[in-house]
Image (tube, rainbow, N blue to C red; front, side, top):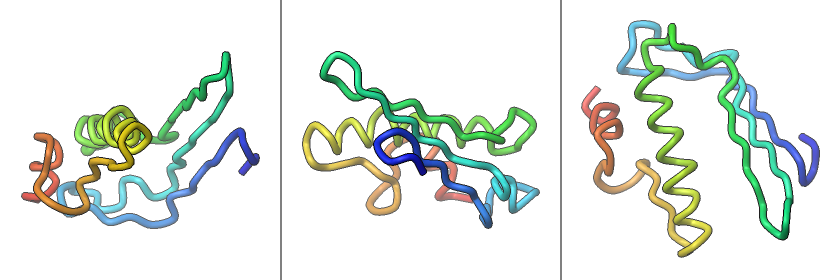
Length: 100
């Protein structure tokens, strides 16, 4: 962690029901880089190690897009995010993950 600039999470353990390799994310890193430009905040998100070879790549990429571009933006603008942890699935990818 670099305060006010960057946070990186190491995925030490994960378990997916919907993939043959249940631990695809184990050892990957999730990075949030934050910059301030022209009185605005810019967030650069990267899931380091999430590659096209992963069975979950498409679903996970779309899920991150939903979390960052929709849920986080909604949380900032309205005070309410749109996570899939509660309530009904909102996207096709969430439906796929829930049914696995």
